[in-house]
Image 1: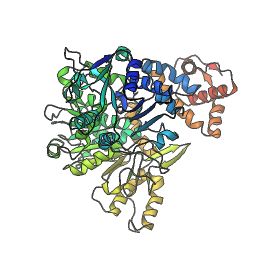
Image 2 (image 1 turned 135 degrees about the vertical axis):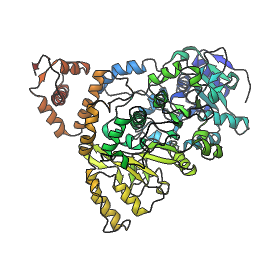
Image 3 (image 1 turned 180 degrees about the vertical axis):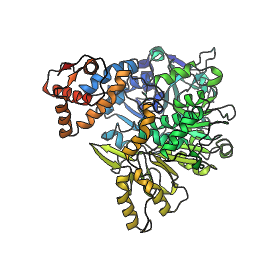
Image 4 (image 1 turned 60 degrees about the vertical axis):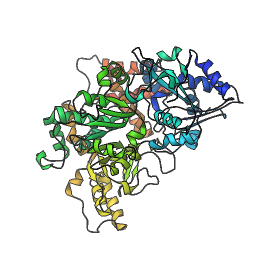
Length: 633
């Protein structure tokens, strides 16, 4: 460690001026991925550099989080009250605002190794300054770039100790501190205290003297960025249940953020606490009345339980702990995580968690989480039967995975730790990499396959192919011949695309000319899947929001309505179909609530009136509540 006297500051602007002055107005600043950014300090640094063209600022970070900024009209009317609830006390990142609006000054550069998914596809600065990197390699790249400052949001201990916690982001910082101790780098570590941030003990807890500067003041009371829970559709549930059946009791689990991770966690909890219904769903998905025929799957409740090791500690890990699924301790630890990010409820739960339980969550360096080469023998012993479950956009018929970019070269998000975990799954005995995709993508009423013959971008090469899962089933590719890989992938391809892909495989000599798909493959349709799972949805076994949501009941109703309207708006024909449906429709109290909530009860402009009619058209397709007063439109 590097003991020193910490200097405390109450004003971010004064600290920023001091840091710029001591570095001759030229700074290279690193900030953590996601939640742990020092928003107040980076805003002050950015504003002062922006106002002085003789200065320069390079920001090295990842996953810059920015509150949604919908355009005026329907979307803004819907989101404004939600934004007030979720982000009213969150300090917006000024550099992100200017980056998105393409107003970043020429003396500021922002480079990220992971982008907010899809947010910067058409942003030249972000695309040009993106750094393609495995998560486990990032600290080395930062050392090479001679970073001046690491500025980070931290938590202070509620007890009498003066220690601070890296809390949500020890991932890279711990590695850089070790490198500084070894003499490989020299930077100044700066803390911005936030009392909303849960204090995480263990590896994330550092003595105050590690930080040269500590910013307190207004920053301590700022809100944390919240990621609202998304709904889980039936296709995602199907893939999640398939994945859950591959998780062995006594094993190790890694899952990611989003509805796919929620589906896996929900299925694992049902497997443990409601095993009979879990097996009913598994049987339905596998088109059998007897789950005894599925002896290759793991379907029983958890006796030993699971140990969690995940670069991202997602909120559902807390639910898995509470349900008794994650209960296998490794040296007193239930979960090792690198960073966390989630809904407001997650931060509250972690703050309220009993100290002895919080100590069983060890937030630590990303190299320990993701790097197979670090302390390998201990990992081999502790990470038994590991299942590393991650998401992707596409998979090729020969098993390559596309997760982070387009064939144009544009970056959607980033590699992150996906390659790390795939590599780790091949290094550890009995470990498996599980990649989840959706079988089809629907856009403007047209479906395309996410299982493709080839694609001009690859995240995971086919020589590292393992397990691919979608709503139609499980494709086990590890160690298989190309002909067997083709057969496996076609078995989970949507029926409407199977014939063309099979013909391409035959034309390229990858499978026998007389090969025929099994009859069951004809069931690979979205309609069949809906028929299979809809009874479970109707009986509340597959809820829209299995782990709750920040949206109220009306907002939950509005989300699919707005999604349908947005899809229809891509086609004038589809939009006017809805408009004509809306003509002459009855208004009831439920409909009026929707129109009032969206600010379209009495629109004045002609486009707004068309939007109102389209909304009425969509609402006319939905079941109407009983005992309501109707008014003719």
